[in-house]
Image (cartoon, rainbow, N blue to C red; front, side):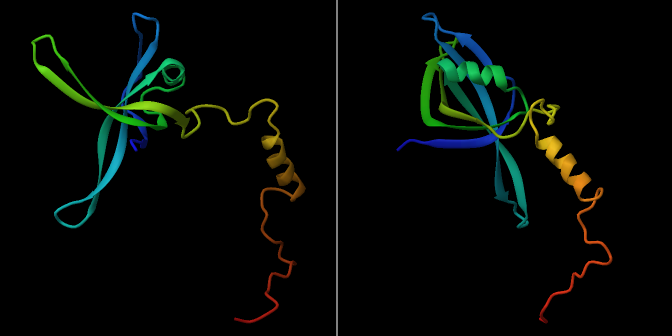
Length: 149
């Protein structure tokens, strides 16, 4: 089985292009944290930068909804590939070929009080019904337990 699951942040904006046959392909890099123990025994976070490739609708989805710094969850398969560069040198890389993409957070700066979403109204109504800004018991409420520890 060849399955990779990554959660991290985009290290740069996705780059989309179209092949000669009209297929969309999007390249992006996911920065994933990895904990390691230092020589003095303390834990340190290090970042691994994993190249990813999405094709077709996944490519268009990533390009449209994600940008540098966004948190992303991807799954796919690990695939090595090689090519010859302009100088005739053989180059190698290992990429994640994306099968699934998920959001991990709401967009920064996005308003949470969406028109037609009654969650905001319910929170306001609960505050009003509770007599203000607190759900704590009033001084005359009995908060003692009916038994001893």
